[in-house]
Image 1 (cartoon, rainbow, N blue to C red):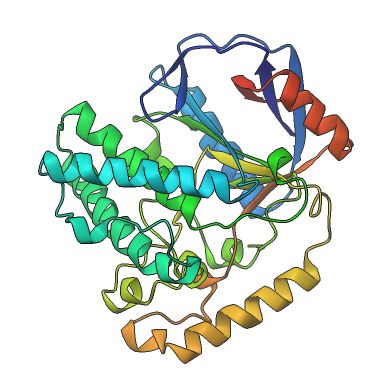
Image 2: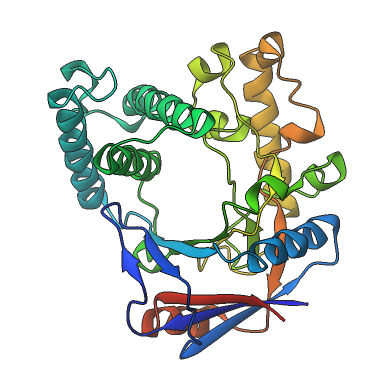
Length: 321
């Protein structure tokens, strides 16, 4: 079976204040279509089931985001200024418990910036979890502020890459329904064993679909406090939402060597910080590094793929055929 993504030249639906695009009710065919072959694996099977669950409900909706990597320090500094603006807004409106000490000095090194970003992440993540678990109704302005904090923090966790970073793109495509999401397929040990770390090949991966950081994210952001506070959240289901990235250097690249080296570094970090003392058996399948592969990209090269998304950058429909 195939996952098909429809793309439009022009925006379809609406964009909210955080930059997330939504299409509801009617999903028009796109000018361009990109297809992936769904893997014949337990993850691929679970994805099809979750996708169909959403499709069968009348309250389904399509939400998506398109991100680009930092091409240089100019965009990093821009996002630092935007994050500080959001923090000041929170302080002025008594949102969360931020103080002026949480503002990010633009001259900090990336290493020194990470602990501040980790603290900000923990505060808005805790609030989002409370809203979700207690089904609280909150002011839309407040919720959008939390979402903007989320996006800015994740952006600033990454540093500029060499090469044509401006062309590197990352899409998250959410096919969701409030009626269906409680029935999404749980991840099993067999599925966790299929996780891979190289997610910039153009292939399709299951979206994290969980509020918080998993142990791998804590490793990449050196978030020791999250581990000590026992607030690590692993991906738990295969939803109907996906993510894929376009990176010329990694496009269609075999992952075996990358996985091996990255996992060695991960295990060394876990051992050094004794994460097992906080209840995290990092050698267990559920703590495997990476994301769950859903589908492989059909025969299309990087330049063709880039041209399609530059001509038609707006998602308007998803389907399985």
